[in-house]
Amino acid sequence: MKNIVWTGFIAFIAIAVCSCKKDYTIGGSLHDPHVNMTTYDYLKTNPLFDTVVLLIDKTGLKEEVNSSGTFFAITDYDIDNYLVQKQEQQRTEMVDPNLVYTFDSLDFSAMKDSLRAYLFKDQIALDKTTATGKLYKSNDGELRLVQGIPTTDYTDGSVFTKPPVYLYLTKLIALPGSPVPTNDADIPNLKPEQYLSARCQTTGIITTTGLLHVLNNDHTFTYFADTFN
Image (tube, rainbow, N blue to C red; front, top):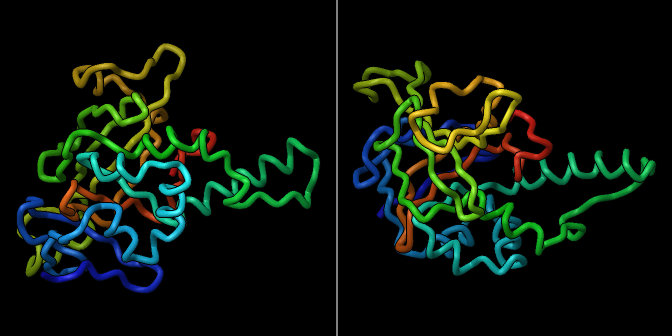
């Protein structure tokens, strides 16, 4: 079994182009997607998820992470992005420019559903997605849109026989006259400004308990203040 290779600051873009049952591509190299450990234990092996694992522990969601069919894993950077924005919000509201907001400032009971927004009972594989997308109910009870969108990036003919596909996890927001759809048939009626999308940098890691995709480091955990990522 080959290990998933993470380089430096995760500057590369990871694109999966094959079924999750086969080898897949990271930066032009094929990797076996299977890891012989649970999703939680796999996260513990990678320093990119140190804070994420701590958040899982603090919210008591280890068993739920392992029992979920799919985890769109946030990274430590995604949590840092949230803390930076939360600190700015608190400084404004408290009129205190020196206020410090850290990981320990979080209300971990309130963070449970925030983390559950990235967990799904379904196994959501890249090769089953479409550009239009499909709605899935996350463990927090809300619907999320999952899309597989072809890209013209990294189309080296010696590596890719067809356009690579990026996997996106999207929170949908309601606008006046444009509600969040409750079924796939209404997806085409969405407006672009209703999409709060996060692209995956790595897809299709198969643990012994489920399927793992990793969101990009520019995403903001909890889709803070409904801003685009």
